[in-house]
Image 1 (cartoon, helix red, strand yellow):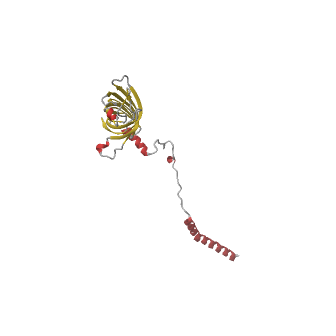
Image 2 (image 1 turned 60 degrees about the vertical axis):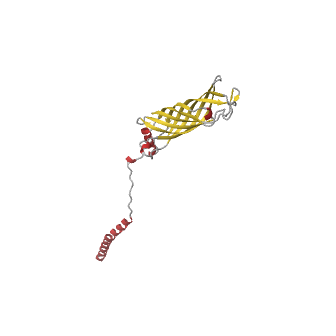
Image 3 (image 1 turned 120 degrees about the vertical axis):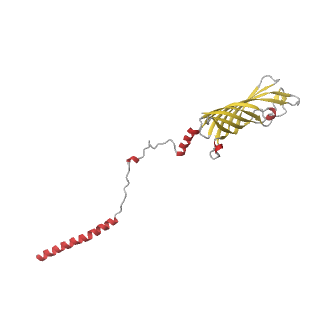
Length: 258
């Protein structure tokens, strides 16, 4: 019996020693296979807020353009015009060039694009020759136009400082042209009208700290009256030359910016 107790005691002692020796090695092996992970944390203050993040501008460039327009742009301008109107083709032989006067109103969509409503009028001496070379008809023709034009202002930021303040532009649009004849030795008057096309260019010089401007504009008006390329009959007589041609004008504009 004593021998059996001694053997049991020796076995328990061996098992205890084995546990003390191999337990740290097993724990180290398990810890070497363990991988560490970082757990993402959310901050409630950084949550997306559709109201605080709302902006009416899609891009920063849009916001910059609008701020620049409100600071340096114009909403509309009003200008008084005076200039010189001439003619091409056979009109140049029958109508004399003369001064013209008008009024311009422009509405700006942005810094580069504007819509202009213009009114111009002027009287021109007229002289017709008929088949009899010794016979002439003299009188006056009044030319009045209402023009709707788009003006595009060119970018001058990359030019020298002295020219950067100038505002060159090109224009194009449509016009309604009215013509009224008053001929000597013929009772009454005649009036007709036609649509035309406008093309041109101009330059604006700022005045009074950009509150006003002096404009210089040149425009060509393509017109086609009903009697063009025809021998107009006057008192039963035909003209020596057919009526044909277009008109052009050089205009000075003194305007105010709003």
